[in-house]
Image (cartoon, rainbow over all chains, first blue to last red; front, side, top):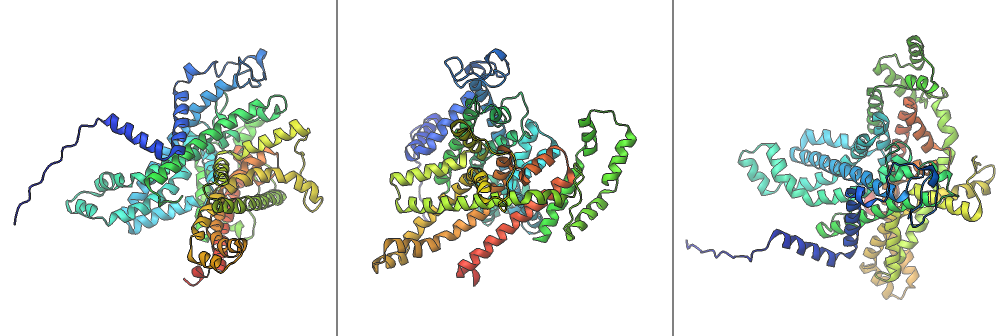
Length: 297
Length: 306
């Protein structure tokens, strides 16, 4: 047997940052809509993080002298029925929306991934039981399940996150299970098993990293939905409570009562919700096309 | 279907009772009066809350077979009555919204597919992505806003039944139905577009064109017939969004339907009402998907023979 010498190919040193920059650039050129979504998302995140510096007023300061003022150079988006600046409350509202959106989408997708992959790895009875339970959760319409969880736990930030997470888990588990089923038969999983690794290690170290693409797709797809769901729950009075700034909450009650006198109260928060969900959907769609064109959600 | 529903019922029933704080305390807290322990206990006994859980469950499930969901813990009236007086409105709204969604999505999606990569296509795509992003309750508020400002018209406070005055009824429900239907149409539009695009590349379409058929006949008789199957599936799957849309839109337009009842029941911790409504919506949800399978089997011989 002849030995072939392997020539090692030396790659030019590329820093991580350069590579990241290049990937970003390529994504922007190939999927301009996705880049627009990402840009809007970036602005929102910046606004949420820097709310204290960016927002012109205090989100909680009520001032009855400036009640229901029309948009002007002092109050760009006008003021609400408590004299609070609408723009400020929208900026602070992005904090609520993003925090709840990211937390619940992350929790939902991660729990769903764990359940889906575990279910696929073990198969048999465990798979059957887990899938039956997921089917059960899937037979509730999204908002109904969220409302039931809210009615169990009561409203408030943490409970809303949980309420949005619960209906997302089965949806993600379903998709990731089917991705993981194909993985299970792969040689590397078999090899890991032959090496005597336990199921925990195989699931976490070998299988989960290989379903990253559908995981990311589900995660971004959930983000927009989570924000929309949070807005709906807050709008119904079952989500975040006053005086915390939340977009759905801003559309509740006073916005409708004063619709004629102060339409800006109802217009701008809704625009904020629509724009952010729009951005997340654009990004999610492009990411899906880039990572896994076959997956149709 | 029945095991799933039984599972749903059990899940909701036991979950609702795990949480501390019940309706009796809430009722008295709302009244703002001091309530002696005995009064609370008496009220609980009256509502059957002092019974063991399994017996409460058995009684409730047993009632299902007689279409008796028990009585509302809040109003004290039978749940079937409370649902009955609101059902007409919600069903009519749901049907109108579905109808509007189909009316929007099928022509728009087809148009976008036929005019692929033109400004019409881009417009339709943006229109449908926007539909996914705009919350239906906000769209409802904007519609009301426009009416109030330009026409000085407010949504009427009372519901007029279709059988009493069809014109008043339709003019009242068309706007909430539009708010819900637009969102409902978004996914269906995208689905129509992509399936029509796919079908238009098939050989039999080329054959139809080659034998000199009118383009409209090719499109409607040959392409759409096949393209609409997945769209019907999507409309069934999106039924969940319809329910969500109804819950919030009824709130906006002040319509006293099932959605509003549900939200009220949740804030009042009306256990019996919440659990019955959840089982009911899940039943409808499962049933609609079953119906969609059935329709697909009717329309597509390939599914039937499998």
